[in-house]
Length: 462
Image: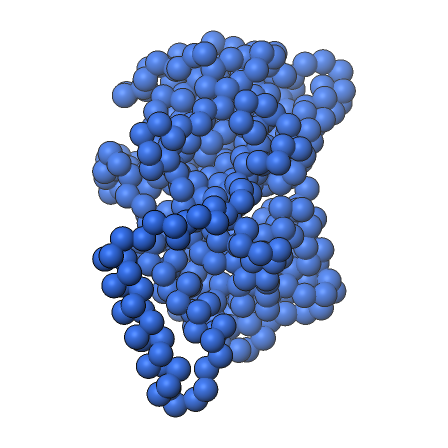
């Protein structure tokens, strides 16, 4: 959605890029104001003079000659790194990576990663990619690529090493908390064609898996819903929208996918630094699901655009959200092109769900907490979220992250082990539980479940 329309052709297109190789979220391509330096006060001039003193000393006295471009780029990167984890400078390589991710196809392993204390940390593997099939999991640390220590590399440099010609092998060393020894893996690079939507029919329920919010995800999801109806020969009794380990994508698509299930009402709002800097996105009439029950599955890898969809459907009482608390990425970045090949990525706003909740730090809390019992490492593997990133933005309402994680009693429904579930043929417990649940709910149950949730606010309608 762009401004007051929903066309992807607008010159000011809004993006909510996944926290992947470039650790991105919501983006917008807008021109950089050339008059930014028109007004500089005396204190700022003093600080710039201090910077120039250091710059000249380094140029004159460093043990080896240093190129001006190298010093300036280092200074820019340092300045942006002091702000938050999602602001940064995109050189030619980084800008190219950004465009590659937006196009939705590249050669590599299928990993969304970020940088933590100089180490590459996995946010989530993309489903049905080399990384996913090799068993790489959220929270894993990548320490070596082809036996070379990558500590100290920039994120872009590490990502570039992981990408390469399809069919070529790559050795990865993984450190996983709870494992005594590093895990050595040999993967084969593939063309990562980020097909955003997959579908299947289970009984008379349509299961829609959105792996990312790349271009055309809304159109692909609508087509998938039609394919489910054609396969069943009727309208399904309900839908499961699986957003687990979906690290985000284009904001246009997050708004569009939310709109597929909504008749009316606000979907998301963006609020900037200035009091009046607010942009709201609303649903248009027409529920593609025809009011059928919807369950949205999320986990700790569901970030950014995924949280927009889950939050919108939850606040508008349109779906029951199930799984575990999401990643908690609620800030907006704007991409400001500097040249044809470089850009600045700057945090410019926060986004809010229809009831006015910020997901920053706290994420989306599901209506029904369901652990992934079919994952044998689930209980021991630490969760990795936005709140774990250094210099992350603080939620304005000071969310107590510890309380969100607290669980007073073990739920007796969730005591089975992964081995026991496997014997019963259950490979995905969260999906299995969602399928069981949706068989027991009717069109009004999502509204009642959310309305009865402690602290629930009435939905905002337009």
